[in-house]
Length: 123
Image (cartoon, rainbow, N blue to C red; front, side, top):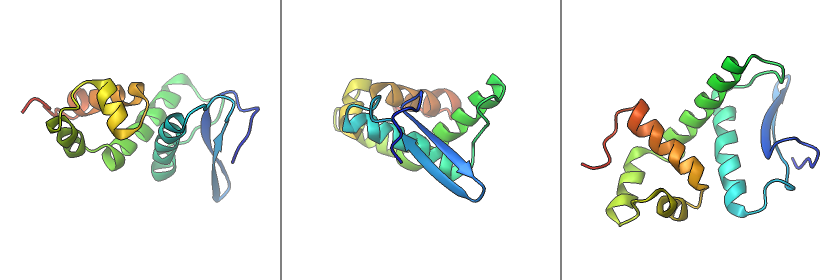
């Protein structure tokens, strides 16, 4: 659902039983940015990791982490990253091009897999 007054590029909201992903196209300028935002927001949808706007920072951070972790497990699994690396895409910017996602999101995924899940991509 497009909404230009949204103070961020994207968010997921719930109204009772219904969910909506809201996109601000004034802040999302490329297809890559939209893909990245939708990947993250799909994590919120799959996990139900939502919070009120006035929630404490700790709860917000936990829900954002849960959404990212879910999207990494479903859409950027370690084995797919490993396959891309075997093809020569070893730098975060190269992986961003390969997966057509923002480089910062790729860096988050690499951190998740290496630091949180103990994956060694050098094997």
